[in-house]
Length: 168
Image (cartoon, rainbow, N blue to C red; front, top):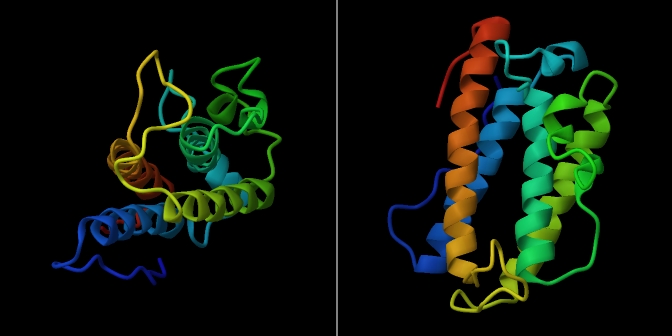
């Protein structure tokens, strides 16, 4: 696997730390998917789970959109992949999904998330609530790091199952 991630610095201000760790984890997902065919990206983990690397990319594109664009920025846009009608569509509907489209959408959502995040103080409260609760921008960044870290553990196991590749 090609790994061009830049490790987060050991010293930095809070915003830089949060952004660098989030970017590290975004890069980790890309590393876990690198060099695989669409068929390999669609390979499921173990029944009854419908998880696959392609499903993880689609899911994390949705998560980027939901937290930064919909919750933090208050944009009135639909959820990705038809999740409004089928909540697990990001994972379940990968058999005919395009990996190229999923990665392009994921990269687009990351860039939009970065733009939104750069213009908002860490203490800012989201324009929309999640489960009836206000969320700070800081909380969203920490949650995104946690979300990626958890799913990168899944991605590591999926990748090892596909071709034996392992790594941080």
